[in-house]
Image (cartoon, rainbow, N blue to C red; front, side):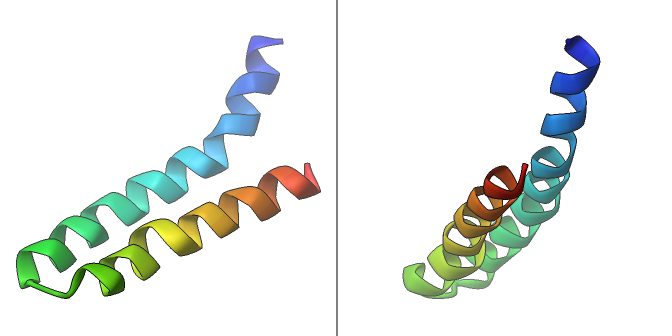
Length: 55
């Protein structure tokens, strides 16, 4: 059961590890909040929803 949980969490974890530095650098660059929201939260939320819906 533990291995299955790790497999299910692997892809969302990789996505989060990829998006976090991008959001950090966008915030440091001074982009507007709405742009950071679209890049960091909106597409990540949609990607996770689609991933879990398929699984």
